[in-house]
Amino acid sequence: MSRAPICVPCRLAAIAAVVGCVGAAFAWTAGWLTPKRLSAPHIVNTFESNYGVHAGYRRNHAKGLCVEGWFDSNGNAARVSRAAVFAPGRTPVIGRFAIPGSNPAAPDASTPVRSMALLFQLQDGEQWRTGMNSTPVFVVRTPNQFYAQLVASKPDPATSKPDPARLDAFFQANPETLPFRNWVKAHAPSSSFANTGFYSINAFIATDAAGHTHAVRWQTVPETAYAPETAAQKADPNFLADDLDARLEAGPLRWHLVLTVAAPGDPTNDATQQWPANREQIDAGTLVLRRAEPQSDGMCRDVNYDPTILPDGLKPSNDPLLAARSAAYSVSFNRRTREQAALAQSHGDAQP
Amino acid sequence: MKQPAQHFSALQRLMHWSMAVLIVAMLFVGVGMVSTVSSLHDSLLALHRPLGIALFVLVVLRLAVRLKRGAPPLPADLPMWQRLPAHASHLVLYALMIAMPLIGWSMLSAGGYPVVLFGGVHLPPIAPHDVALYAWLRAAHTWLALALYATVLLHLAAALFHALIRRDGVLASMVRG
Image (cartoon, rainbow over all chains, first blue to last red; front, side):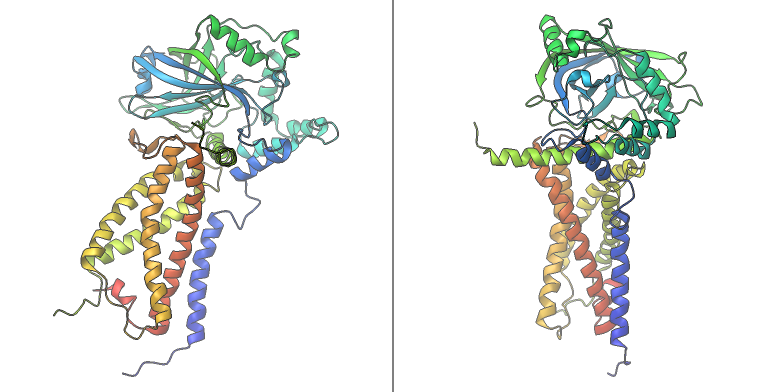
């Protein structure tokens, strides 16, 4: 059988071209060809280059403590979400209080913001995770702005504080930051985690039993009355943890979980704006926290409080920060668990 | 004695080509979702888990069919230095197709994540919540995904080599009956 002669080098070149293109498409998708495109490692790398690597700790909100308790749902929120957590009944909660920043030894008074993260462990294995801040709005609207703010906040090696001129230039160039800055100016930091309210920051989409969707935000409203940080507290680097321990000695602490339901047209993609004050609010039940543990061995240590981990009946909105939070938290979790694994190995794992 | 078939069965060809599309899509979804902070991150992640479990079910079925039906023999004149990598690369492909979904599932379990497929449908954990184990599995998931993509590229190059240079009917055995 005679076969038609072929140009072997031409055909080899064609094969190489096909394989090369398929490989290049993969490299492009992975972002290897576009190192300037914003990615989660960029964000986490910038935290690390700004504030150093604190092995085993979260890259942001590094200083915190674990809490345990439960959520008693009264069934009111079942009207907007079919999530099992909103049916009447009790759901166990693993929580974490923290302050923003990468330094796990930062003095508590170094920031006016506090955070509360919650993991609701639903009966059938579903989970609801939320990471909330003590400000009703976030400082920036987009992941790119967040990154630009992080770059502008790089501490000056001489003062180990951000360059005020640079940070101010960022704020001037990004007027969306104004509502946040005004809110912080108008609200003195609280004296305790227990008397602080926390806000979901982002909007979410709740789906009710009939399949109708409702844009919502949520907040935890403390039963403990607000009081401002005292002068003595400002001098105590760990007053928040000490205060919480003392209060929990006396009994459990309570917050109401309140959902705010948007009206049609309220923006869901802008965490820098609050919805109008007259929007419907639903008191969904009571969050009860009864025990605190240090994060070094507490239940919250190995939890990534990714706010896009939601039960059926809640889903992310079109807020661009949500996907970026999920992506960046994941990189932070991957790095700190790798460091923890290395530490465990070097200290020997065979402890009883 | 019956001659061994010169072509893969219609069922084998269907499984090969549908899984080829899904696996390549899966690798792009995986590498894409960790590279972006846009809302694509959420939608690709939501696709990645159910697609991975679907691929696991498919590869188990496919392996059963492969063991029962076998494969056409390689051309008799294929030199040994090509015969060995041909067999080895198929073993690697099968091993990674089985391992990747199981590593993904156990990695999420070890990280304490719920393994959500869609809506309220989720799978139970298959590993203890242990972050040292998570860290190990998470790294393995990335490196083995890259190894799988490299093996797929090699597989593609070899198929084209058989079709365009050797013209020995190896690609045809997977293309037509």
